Image 1 (cartoon, rainbow, N blue to C red):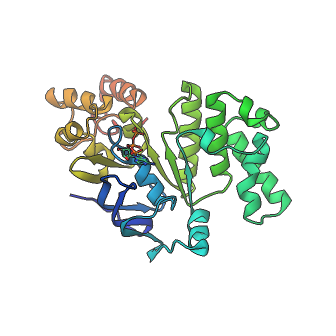
Image 2 (spheres, rainbow, N blue to C red; image 1 turned 90 degrees about the vertical axis):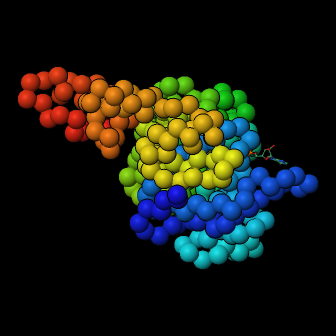
Image 3 (cartoon, rainbow, N blue to C red; image 1 turned 45 degrees about the vertical axis):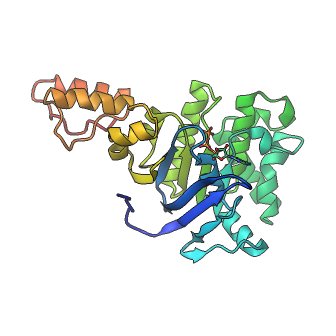
Amino acid sequence: MNHSPAGRAVVELVEAGYAYEDGPAVLSGIGLGLMEGRSTALLGRNGSGKTTLLRLLSGGLRPATGGLRLHGEPVTYDRAGLTRLRTTVQLVVQDPDDQLFAASVEQDVSFGPMNLGLSENEVRARVDEALAAMDIAALRDRPTHLLSYGQRKRAAIAGAVAMRPRVLILDEPTAGLDPHGQERLLEVLGRLRASGTTVVMATHDVDLALRWADDAAVLSPDGLRTGPVGELLSDQALLDSARLRRPWGTAVADVLRAHGLLGPSDEGPRTPEALAAWTRRATTPGHEGVAGLTRG
Ligand SMILES: Nc1ncnc2c1ncn2[C@@H]1O[C@H](COP(=O)(O)OP(=O)(O)OP(=O)(O)O)[C@@H](O)[C@H]1O
């Protein structure tokens, strides 16, 4: 069963299908609506079509069947239609070398905002903010081709963040980032989400998905399933068919339930910190019980 949270989708794929030239259908009958301010983790095995799906959502590919809607209106793939889509939806591709092209970090991150016709001061403010958010302010004058992989990845994400899109789509953004870089990125995405930005991330990291996302979208041979991340990532049949590992938090919840410490419909912990805080409360005389396990 597909799940659609209340509200209207900013962008929505409707019965969308796609096949590369001379190839079989990669995706068919895909329905995916991205709601204002919600975060979605897109999961699926290698070659399941995650990148293809993200390119359909951001207008880089045009559905062969079905369509894409922006604020409920069908997207037209002419210049005006694509410009409208791209000022709302920004995609950060998996490989930063496919995204970075300007000589320096500052020039690269400025490019999009400059093309929006913003004033010089506004462009500078956005670039400063995006570089600071991605922790690369010190790299602003560096040639992009001399940066490390993780630094290039952060510069590519900064370029999209500087566009202040309503919908930010990231294809495996944490791959290649060190733990500090991953934490910084999650903080940035958390702030964007709090300010109403819709964020979609393709990832192979089920623990990160459970911790970070509101919703999951899981590609398997049976098609696309969407729903609350805690619910989908507890569904063993779905995890098996998508060849996904059971997340850490879901496995812990199984153990707690088996010992009667968690009710059948109570959600498990999403982070080790949440489990530690709950354990402290649960072992304190007069504790508040299992309530609040997912907090922290
Ligand atoms: N440009 C292309 N031309 C032809 N086939 C392609 C092209 N890009 C992708 N494919 C094929 O489409 C299918 C889906 O690829 P896609 O990159 O969308 O998967 P993915 O889920 O993102 O994979 P991964 O987890 O490995 O990044 C694969 O079978 C792939 O070989």
